[in-house]
Image (cartoon, rainbow, N blue to C red; front, side, top):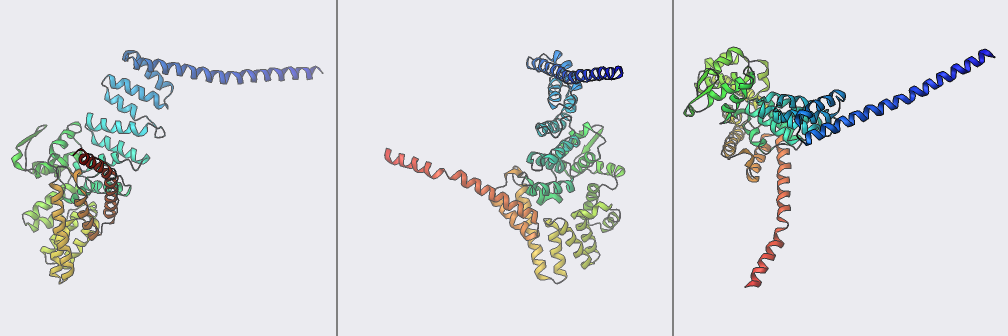
Length: 421
């Protein structure tokens, strides 16, 4: 009996202990939550009052105690912004989890900060790509990626991004002009913009190459431009030669050298350059066009036709390849094909000129886009055809919706005028 009594007392002690511990756990949870909420309230009050000296330690404690809380990181970002510490702001924005409803806005802010404040397009690109993993239809992210890829002459990434945007119906208005001109795209302000970005990251291969190509292809009348220790004469290939030593396999540099050889009709130099092409050139329509030109110079007409066909398959809108193929097909005695490709070459050249003459690529009207639609259809570029069909239908629907209220308004105004008379 004594043993039984001891067992019961022991059980009661253990039971009471469990009750006590069970009660303390939720009590501690409640207390921790209360302290965190009090800390957050103090921090928010300090920020609202712009008492940044008090807000900083409070915000830092908040993120330490709740590192998964997006609200905490956003408020610490606000404090860092007030102090002009933009690196800290970017760090805070980068800590917002994709599951948070404010993630997209924070990434847009981060990307703008990286591009405008830090002049680091590579970091901005990472933020825009992160946005698209969450929202593939985010048209601003597509637009900014297209802008950076085009400005930095990353043609392969540019075309891929434009096609992805078109498939998502999220392409910016300038996409179609850029798509048409992708093999030839060069911007008049490209040198200055890329040189500005390059100051933040002087060893960036992409930026160095783009700067060199812009310098070589810019009209000499622009005069002298300075970058770092370089004194660069516009139209001079000095920077291209320097970059070739560091990046001998870069496609944009290879394309420049090859186009120089073609412009000078130096087929021997062209042949040597084509022997050094990296494997990535096989996916670039320009290089198949160069190969076709070289084969044509050797009177290997059928081989040249094959190369031009490959170029068009990779980029159906490449009017230069259509033009060259038209001449080759004529030599081969294929009159109908020769006429078709010659006509596409001429139309594409004219369309590119019309897009280039626009004050801004975003200002292409329905008439010009309709011309491009017919050209893309005849070239067999289904992505562009589908995208333009959707865009033109959207523009037409929008116009009709805008006009819907005009007749009654005009009638009212006219009736009023008549009655007044």
